[in-house]
Amino acid sequence: MTDDYKRLKPHDLVINPEIQIVDQGYTLKINDVLVDRSQIIIITEQSNPEGSLIPIVYPEAERIHVTDEKGNSVASMAV
Image (tube, rainbow, N blue to C red; front, side):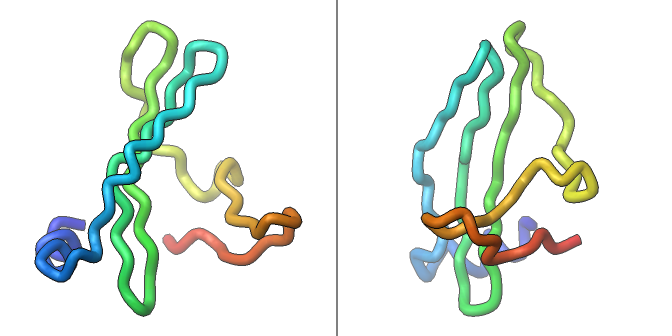
């Protein structure tokens, strides 16, 4: 990830959307989004109601879905 960040940052391809979602005390923060022609990398941070960080959500958990506005699947997680 660091190599992609260093490569994309000078070209203004790293965005900090400042998105934070809180639900029942659990927090999901989208810290950075890296974009180039072939990929979108979303860097997130998750914490529980006590403020402790939650380990990475793995694609196998099927918890992250990328959909269009109609709910149709438009992308899949890369491993």
